[in-house]
Amino acid sequence: MERFLTYDRLISSHRNRLDVSPFPEDKLNMAYLDNKYNQFKLHLDNGDPEMTEKVIKEIYNQLQSGTEVYKYAIEQTDILDKVFDLLIYSEDNQIREIASLCFKQFCKALISKEILHEFSYIKKIPVALDDEMEAVRENVLLGLIY
Image 1 (cartoon, rainbow, N blue to C red):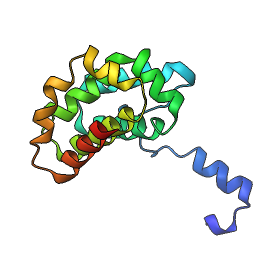
Image 2: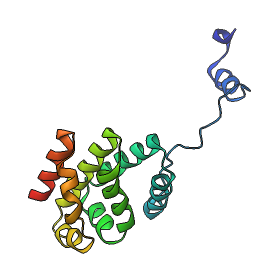
Image 3: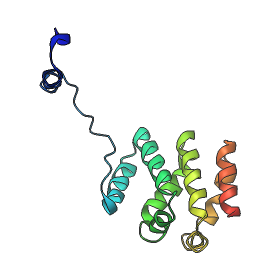
């Protein structure tokens, strides 16, 4: 029957369906400008491993920009703290690997040297250097080289 409908009626019939699955609550909705940081904090505090992985991937994508690295280093240090804690304490290999990529990207900025000393991240780095995953160790070492 649907093949006989015009496109506008076909679209209308799909919009008016009653059996549409509800939108999941735990989806990461990107907010505009600086409101995104609050969304990141909420999802990182939630503790859901799947959402944590998605949030850290999004943070890593944003850290490709130098201005974002600066914002995380200066204005959003609590998110940086959470990413670093996930690098050290997370039991999920994928989360630790993405967090190590974020750490490496963060270390490319000149200001990161001061931040690493200020928040005493350097004292916790040996835990990451003894990680079972080679990619995590490599990313942390490259970050320290930068």
